[in-house]
Length: 174
Image 1 (cartoon, helix red, strand yellow):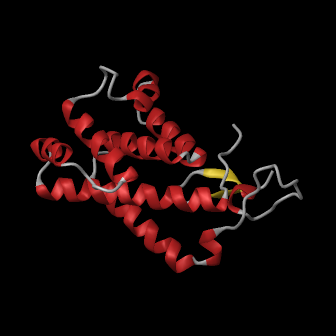
Image 2: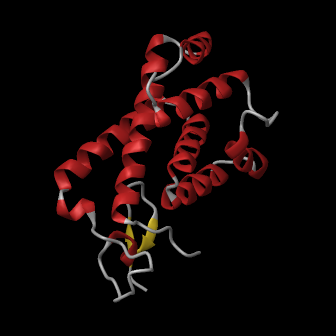
């Protein structure tokens, strides 16, 4: 099977980025296009945001935020990628599984809870945006700059989720 290196250095099947596909029925998930090839400048611009947030948000927190937003958005590729990245970085399976129900799980610090609440509200946005209560909790734990960087991280994973979902990028079969 042909393999390529994806945006974050992950090696995945070439078909997952649209380099080779087999004819399939309408009912099967088939990758639609390789954004990095079709619009490389735009893809690189998003990747520059990715590099920025990686340099400004703690890795463990960043992976929790990415995983939570990806779960909310239903992005299988990103849920797979970020759960594997977090495991590789030493995150526990207990905490990773609990991200889906973080409000009820006792495994997260108040600081992480504030970030996860912000992730939920920025990802779902709704009519009222981020609530004052969530904003106040975030500001208890994060400086103005750290809050801005957290919002950039949440926005960036939401962009990646929308790209992967729209183009049907599938997670690699391991």
